[in-house]
Amino acid sequence: MLAQMKNDFSQGSISGNILSLALPMTAAQLVNVLYSVVDRIYLGRLPGSGHLALTGLGITIPIVSIIMGLANLCGTGGAPLCSICRGQGDEEEAEHIMGNSFTLLIALGLTATAFFMVLKRPILYLFGASDATFPYADDYMTIYLCGTLFVMVSLGMNPFISSQGFGSTGMMTVVIGAVINIILDPVLIFVLHMGVKGAALATVVAQGISALWVLRFLTGRRAILRLRRSCLRLDGRRTRRIVALGLSGFCMNMTNSLVQVVCNATLQSYGGDLYVGIMTIINSLREVFFMPVHGLANGSQPVAGYNYGAGKYSRVRESIRFSCGLTVAYAGIFWAVAMACPGLLIRIFNDEPEVIAAGIPALRIYFALFIPMSLQSAGQAVFVGLGRSKQAVFFSLLRKAVINAPLTVILPIWMGTTGVFVAESVSQLVGGLACFLTMYFTVYRPLGRVEDGAPLSARL
Image (cartoon, rainbow, N blue to C red; front, top):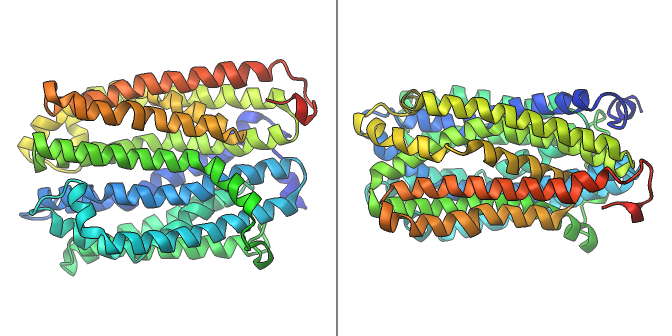
């Protein structure tokens, strides 16, 4: 009961509620990318083969993104629904949603493991591998796929911890795993001379321990909503609601994967392994610096969803103003760093002269319109937090699948490798503004015309 009162987001300051979740979730997101980014930093510095190892690892990114997308399908689909149910006082339904999300996670994880194991070789070549980089990609992917269920549980169920107000506990899920990964990486890669295989094994062990941490909390006494055996049986209505809302996060990962495949294949055709490696570095930086935006968005969703469920519409509007303003401010800081110090950022991963020379202009073009892209994250977080699945899915698809992927194929015909990076900037501008303005005119302004406590029929 004390935990329930403490985590009542309809009370207290909106900024305080959001930051109490967003700060640990942002830290968790930043630490989470260390799983892959630290691997790339170490592998990029392997004596004699660092460039090829880094490129090989970059080819596996689309598969990793797909697996993360499946986790998001359940986590970002179920957790906001739990927040809305808590705001309505229906905790029994919230627990059933969480239980159904867990069962769906396991089923999707097993299916993904089998699929990629069987079709691994043709998929990696399709995704941009060459004969020189395939062995590295194959070694990493084979071991990583053995830990798919660990990844699914740790990423997919952790949002159910944070959505209950236990932001620090959610942060510890990834902190524990990342620390273990960072410790194991140099030991397995360099001391035991396992190379790429060592990086993959370190990740699997770390994610396995994180998964155990999540399950221990959600089945323990501290949790407000517990993972119970009686709630695991799939129900068609609940599953459809979870999938419908989770499609936003899933589509975002899937479209990221699609664009990455198109980028790698196009860059391989126009620039070879060098430019595939540069894109791997740029994607690594994007993951690191976009995570605070993502963490802030995730931190605002439980607060917005809870207050929406409780009929506190003025507080929902306040949460939108606060989260959007903070998102844009952060994005502006990162944009300035990327424009001023591109070479320094690239040298974190690789200091070969040809990589630096080709990477600096590519990085500046890629991140030129990072601020509008942050607006998409802010707008999308509002759609997901309020359960507006159709809009969330549409804008996930618009920027990447409708704008970015086609331009990535078309522009290089005239611009060469530069066209790949220009395509990203154009999609950031158009997709970001379209999502944010739609959210403003269809959600934020209409909420201002609805009185607090109005019945469901008066809502959006």
